[in-house]
Length: 150
Image 1 (cartoon, rainbow, N blue to C red):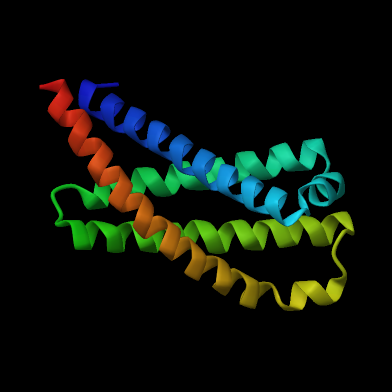
Image 2 (cartoon, rainbow, N blue to C red; image 1 turned 135 degrees about the vertical axis):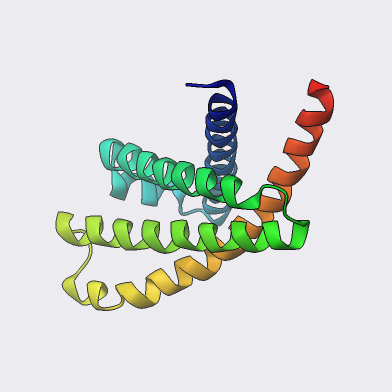
């Protein structure tokens, strides 16, 4: 792997890991403060929880890699738009996968699957917002890292 591709891969892995860690950390904190974290974790179980985390991380890694390629040399507003679109794709995909897993495992009633497209649309909108903020953060972090590397 040449040096430029390796650097791009490391950027994507680092930023995707940061994105997922911040998102999951914020969700855990919000659920804990609401008093529903224990109930949710009992309902999910360890193996499905780890599997969902890995799915989220994999989706985020793929989207981050594509977004970084498309964001190069773009103004901040356009970079945030690219991040928003890829974040939306991750949000919609993750919601749909989580609902499908719940349906297959028998944890969700079949009627819930009828609303999966609506839920995925909400996931897309939420993902767009998170993706745009992540693109802003990524742009700042990469600029700082490049300054330090000189």
